[in-house]
Image 1 (tube, rainbow, N blue to C red):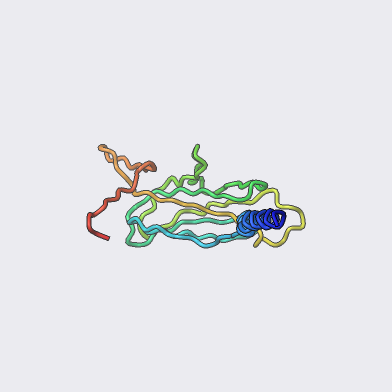
Image 2 (image 1 turned 90 degrees about the vertical axis):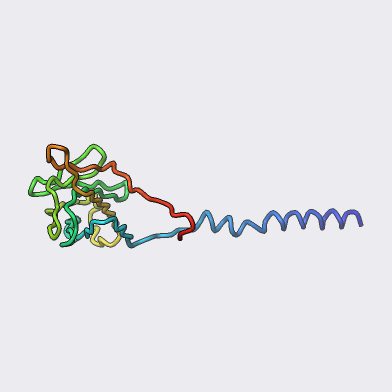
Length: 169
């Protein structure tokens, strides 16, 4: 009788320990992929145009007609086994130390930047399906600011102010 009780107790412990294995296994084997974008509207309205050909993304950012003048910067990401090479024919895009490419001109309402080409290098020979590559382009804009002498500048360190209204939503 004592032997049966020990076996049942061991079986109960074993079942308790293995009950969570399925969810733990699912945690370590789950793969998820996300696509799409989310736009934050902070006063200026800009849209990105991305065209792809010959393993190169051609990127341009346009400002809506009623938008205030802004400065633009762009950065792209891809898998670590591939290199991205930036180029433009106008010389208006310059690399920054932070990995962004900065557009030198002020983009006024209704205008757009010149095209910045972002080429994928190290593509395996015979690779023809570009849909397996994902180059993510991040761009930011900041309103044009002016110094006391009237010289325009971009303040990329400006923080968005927020406030909390007590009792509000």
